[in-house]
Length: 531
Image 1 (tube, helix red, strand yellow):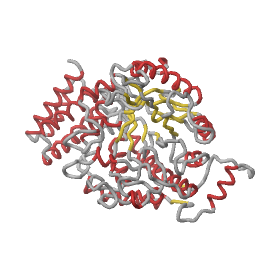
Image 2 (tube, one colour; image 1 turned 90 degrees about the horizontal axis):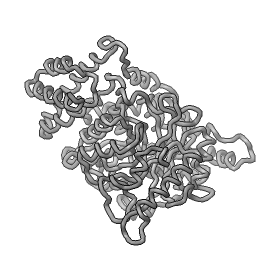
Image 3 (cartoon, rainbow, N blue to C red; image 1 turned 90 degrees about the vertical axis):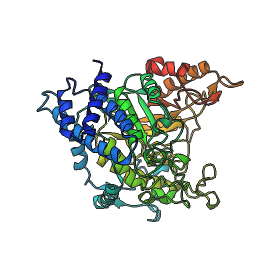
Image 4 (cartoon, helix red, strand yellow; image 1 turned 120 degrees about the horizontal axis):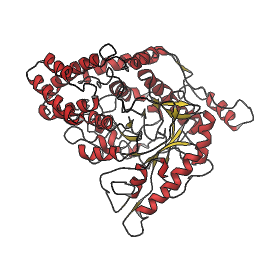
C-alpha cells in the first residue's frame, strides 16, 4: 500500500477508536501497522481526518488532541531504540535545550568590534556605552529570563489548549535527518556546506474559519504543489504570527490547526520552514507598531485593545508568551529549518496621530543610537531565550538591512553581533541590480559586516516585479535577471536566497508573485545549479 494510503487508513482507524473512547485500541492499531515509522503519512492524514470528523467542535477537538498525544506517545515507544534497534530519537534535543536554559546572558557587549581607538566603530561604541540605562542594560541574569519564562508558563497553562507537536519522541524523519548548522561562519547541513534557493510563501498559514488569515488561503493540493516545486533541502519562509495565523478567529485563543497543517505537509515533502514569529507593525499581527520601548522590554506585555492595536482582539498573549508556546510546539518538527523572531525589525517611533494602525510610512527615527541599543537588547534577550527553548535550531534575524532605524550603517553590525543571532538577513528589492544598495547600507556592506562578525547571511526576501502588463518586465527576463542576481550574491557571500513570493496564481498582471508555470519557478526547481 502506498505510504499516503497507509497513513490515511491508520488515521481513520484512530478516529474510530477515538469515537469509541478506546485509546488503547488506537495505540494497538499503530502497533499493528506494518509501517509504523512512516510518521509523515500517519501524522498528516490524522491531522486532516481528525479536524474534519471533529467538525471544529471545541470539545471534540480537545478530546481528539488529547488522544493524539497518547497515540503519538505510544508510537514514540514503538520507534524507540528498544523497540526498533538502530533507530535514534530526538528527545535529547529537548533535554539539551532545558539544560542550557540557566546560562547567564550578557547584553550591550560588542563581541566582534575592533578595539582600535581610532576606528569609527570604537567611537560609536564609547558613545553607546555612555547611553542612559533607560535604553541599555549591562547584564540580564539567568534569574531574570527564568522569571519571564515562569510567568509565561503560568499564562500558557490556561491559554494553550492543544499538546505540543508530537515529533519530540519520534526521531528524525528519514529524509530530513539533520538540522542546519554553522561551521566557520557558513551554513552546513549534515556536515557539508549548505547553500540554497527557496521561496517566501507568507500566506500559507491562512485557513479561513480557523484564523483571520494573512493573504489568500491555499488548499492542501496547492501546498503540495508548492513544496513539490522546490529542490531538495530547500527552505520556505512564511508568517507564523500570533495575530492572524495562530489565534482562532472565533474563540480568540491559540489554535494550532493551521500551523500544524503547514508543518505536516512540509514534512511529507521533506522540506524545511522558516516561521516568522512577529511583524514590525503590519495588519497581519495586530498592527501594533514595535517602537524602542517595545524592543527594550515591552514585548513582555500584551497589546490587544483598540487603543494599541487594530482592535480585533487576536493578540491575547504578549510576544514573550507567544514565543514560549510556538517554539516549544514546533522545535522537534523535522520540517523546522530556523526561527525568525520578527520580520524587518526597526526601532522607529510612530507619531501619535498615526497610531495605532497607520504608522507604516510615517515613522521617525529621533535617536539612532538608542534605537540600535534597543534592537540589540531585543535580540540578546529573545534570541537567547529561543536558543534555551530549542538548542538545535538557528535564529535568523529577519532584518531588512537597507538602513532602517537602529541598523543604519555600522549599527547593522552592532545589532548583528548579538549572541542571540546566528544568521543575518537582508531583503533585496533593487530590481535587476545584482548587488544592490549604496556604500553605507547596501548589500556589499552587509556581506562585509557578516564576514566581520563571522556569521552566515541570507537574502530573506528577494523580489523583482514582472508580468504580462504593458511596460512590465517579462517573466522570462525576470528569471534571467534573478539568475544573475542569485549567482552574484552567493559568490559575494550569501548562503541562500528566498524569492518573494510564491502563490498558486499571480494576483495582478505586473507583480512580485512567482507561481506554477513561471520561468522563475522552473529555475528555482533546478536549485542553485540553475542559477
